[in-house]
Length: 275
Image (cartoon, rainbow, N blue to C red; front, top):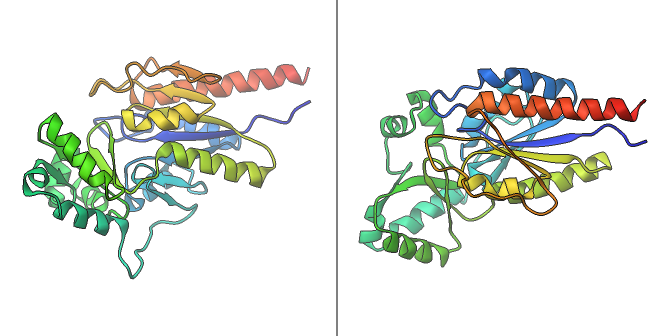
């Protein structure tokens, strides 16, 4: 007889656990409560900063778990509310210097959080000004918008790539970083908990946008949340040996329905194993 199934759930925020327009997750509270009651772990994964992520993680009830921040470029440890820069500055400082060194024509086509005031970040994201101020406290990445041609964008990516800078496309923004993805962090944390627990967890990933693709592909169970605000993950297919589900509802309601369905399925399977 095997032991109870332990879930290690990785979830994107905007458009997945958080509704795209309201940034709320009230509709997901039943699943969040049951996930915690049964002792499963939830790792939130987002382009958000540590300053943004910490209060959301706490409100969801999973401050005892790591959080993947800035699209996988960093990790917020359990129970930490913020991170601090070293005396040598941050990776975000290096990104800004690399942007400043671009040819003027290419630099003019990309505007990011470091270019915008708090008011502008709030306008472009729909966040409150307080939340927008937290979103500007970046340490590892620079989200922004590209306004140039496709060919210029390829030049932009190529020049930044020579400086080991990667560009990831999310639901709202293109995000620059020195590497680290949600998928790579999933693999790292799954291995970490395998060593801690002495057994492997069943990994589950939920996402809605192209920058969730790697995370979804690496999980044992991938759940795609539809988002009418963008093309999302149209064409995403199930990797060999993995399970894939497409939620019927958007945002927190879809998240809640799919996680409750999964928990119910696990409970029924374990009940049968004890007969």
